[in-house]
Image 1 (tube, rainbow, N blue to C red):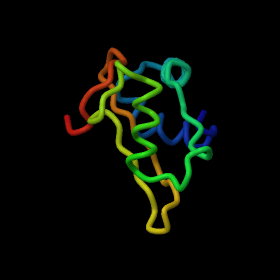
Image 2: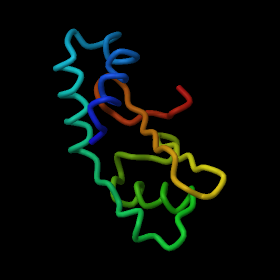
Image 3: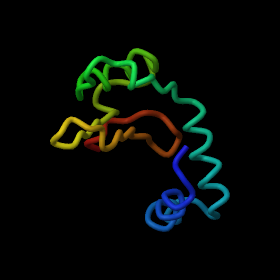
Length: 97
């Protein structure tokens, strides 16, 4: 789970636009987090964008599909961010929508 500071910042920036209360927003975050199977990225031999993405796809198929996940790495190959895109009913969607 994200830490409290990140969750608060995300609520202020994104959650307050859709959810009536911060509690509802945080419940949604927890629900989505618990539904997602997270691979052990540390177990990957020299993780790359594609190997990380494929690890998520393998564990979360058939619901998760390639265009619903974006992986970002820093120049040195360190993982920076993983984005998963959902609609308002918590279905995965293409991140370009």
